[in-house]
Amino acid sequence: MAVQSGVYRGVSAQERAAARRTRLLEAALAVWADQDTRTTMTAVCAAAGLSERYFYESFSGLDALLEALMNDIAVEIEETSRAAADRAGADPALRVRASIRAFVQLLLADPRKGRVAIVESVAIPKLRRRRTELLRHLAHQSAVEARERLGPSHRSENEDETAGLLFIGGMAELVTAWLDGTLTATPDEIVDAASRALLGLYR
Image (cartoon, rainbow, N blue to C red; front, side):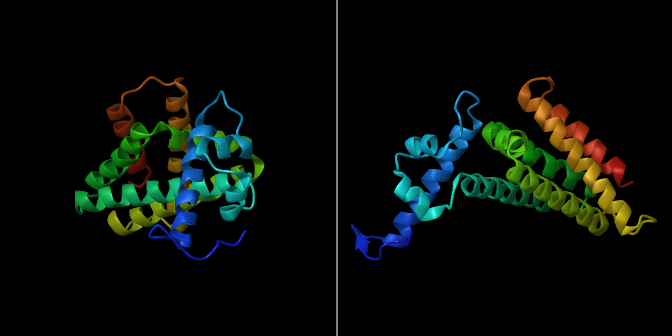
């Protein structure tokens, strides 16, 4: 649907559309993370307080909305983790620990983000493929970080990529068990275990 032009009460049509898109994404996060609520366009629109007309203003369908939400969460995870690593300085062990701690703190601040991006997305075929793509991207970033920060080594690029996949795949399973409550661990224990695992894979 095209966005109508014009300014209303000092807010442009594009700004109003962007605000409605944000409301839909926030509503999708709430609905999708609620295991007692079926994730439908109707439920999302009700949670956002918007009609389906406004839904189609921003998204072609429910899968497109959920994929956009996953992408936003993935970007937030990557940017938050990288910023924390950069603040930690040049020491590889400190960078790894800071990056993982930032990720864990993000999940603690809003566990719904981990649930929808890592757990709930598995149930939807199209989103399961996107989940795999995002995890592989994060695995590649881990490999790049290792090559740049851990210095020269005997490892090949393929070995670094393999290690990245092992770490990210394991981290996804760890977070799933943690969010499901099947694993009882403190945030510090999660950070410690994940940091040892990542450093061990590249040393």
